[in-house]
Image (tube, rainbow, N blue to C red):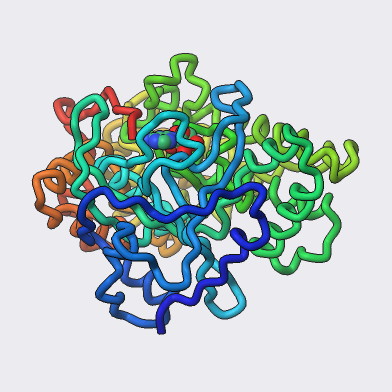
Length: 468
Ligand code: AMP
Ligand code: MG
């Protein structure tokens, strides 16, 4: 069966969309397809022969009704009403059973919201988004997904001239906090109300008839849980502007993101973020700040004290979700809840002082538990924490759980770079190999893989290009 579209967004919200087709940029070459995701959406294994042409805009995709979405947002703390899909188009909503899924294409050419920019995306940033979204998904962190990557024949001027691409992605919704900020700014109250209700119906159907206070509390909770998961896995989004915050609490719009290698929580990856607004340790606070902007925007729909009480649940929800994740990662469900945070604190200081790789440290812990003596970095510098941990868990670590939540492979900037350089030269074998590892990151067979290796001192990428 082909993908069945129900273009509900285009149909319901003409006043905040612009209909337009994908503007091709030369040819369209399918470089990667997410086969399992394709099978979920289309209930067929093989993609249609025309898929690349449809995605590249050479032919229109039967049933789709592409629109650019209008929105606003707070960027680095400042309100900007002039945003919108400047290079992306919402192709439509795929219907799967009683759920719908947005399909969006990024790099589809200029729109009325491009603000003079070219409307294109480079292969480099498209690959980076693809890697991160599938890696986060495999870690059970809510995120948009990458569906397909095509390259075009366009050459795009960024810091250098680069090959162009388009990335098809899926999401529960592409409605951002910034959509409501736009409606507030333009006093589009009726639109705001309908957009809120529609997005809730799509995202949390069981809350369709709940009151807005309860629905907003769910947005708060989902955002808190997403950010808690980022913190637990050392994921730095990098551009947490309100136009990059999905109402569904899915990780959204990947730019200069990074996963920590060495545990250095103060490190800044986005070099346009001179004040360090979006560093790892800032993320929980920025999440709340962004929710406050959303609360302000929807204030015409809901009482101020209801908004306030929902916002007050953010911090406890985030703490709870973070502790749940860390309890799994450290296998310490047998430890009383009020003692776990101390073990986490000790673990993080240990990693920070010794500049230990944040991901592989957890694997050292598993190895140590299996060997019943400290292994890896724990043998060199972690003996006192190891003793404290053993005292606390007293032989009851959840090793099986730990093996299912502690990846061997994550997105590492230097490895992404290697994959991108090969792909730019026309060789996609590294890309396919890396993505396969990222989709099954807990597999024991990856222990010795080159994808599991942290960067050497020479391989550390210190300056990340923020252009995309
Ligand atoms: P981003 O930093 O990708 O989240 O984008 C912020 C805003 O700039 C969004 O409104 C984008 O659509 C727009 N934008 C980013 N890059 C381009 C581009 N190359 N052409 C047109 N608009 C863009
Ligand atoms: Mg964005």
